[in-house]
Structures are given as structure tokens and as C-alpha cells.
Length: 137
Picture (cartoon, rainbow, N blue to C red):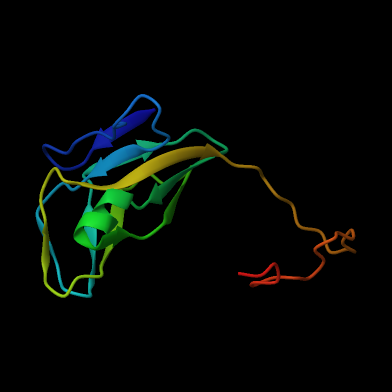
């Protein structure tokens, strides 16, 4: 997949292990994340997804567990060619400095299906309209 570097020294996405589903995304510059706040962190890269694919920006569990910093889930569409930005949220009581080169999120590329919505009757299922906790805790 083609990657365009839009900020000097930006790191390309890469997997932390051979079996990893996601490719780590890295901060392209130092950014201050305020306590209990949110901030957009540039990655310094843009990607060229093929048609019928999406890239999902997902949190890194280690960053959430160890630092109290979570990436917001996001979708990059196949026709987007701009810089990937990661929205980080702080659960911390103090500010957190995101360092250039730090792993801040992961990117998972998935195929997508094109859906065409047509008004009509729905088929019956065992679940029916049960939602939001209908199966218990």
C-alpha cells in the first residue's frame, strides 16, 4: 500500500509482531495532551487505500492501561488522501506529553461491502428487536 510522508521524519506504520492485526501509528511531533482533555495528533503520513477497503484507527491497549491515554476509534475511507490524525483522550489527572515517534494508535485495514438500502419487510429472527442488555449482564 502506498504511503506519502507529509511531515519530515514521520514513521511509516508497522506491526509490532508478525501476527499483529494492526500496524502501529506514530506521533509525528510532540503534542501536549491536557489532563482530562483531548487533542488531535498528526502522524505525518497519508495512505492510498484500494477501492472497497477502509482503515480503522484503533486504540492501543498498553497506552490506555499504562498511561491513561486512549485513541478514539476512527475510519479512514478508501478515497481519503489527507494526513492521518489521531484523536487522543486523556483519562489522567495531569497533562501528558505525547512524544514524537511514540506509538499512539493502531491501523487495521479491512475490506468493505457496498450496501444498498431498500425499504421493505425484515425477516424474523430469534432475537427480534431485543437490544441494549436484553441478554443480561
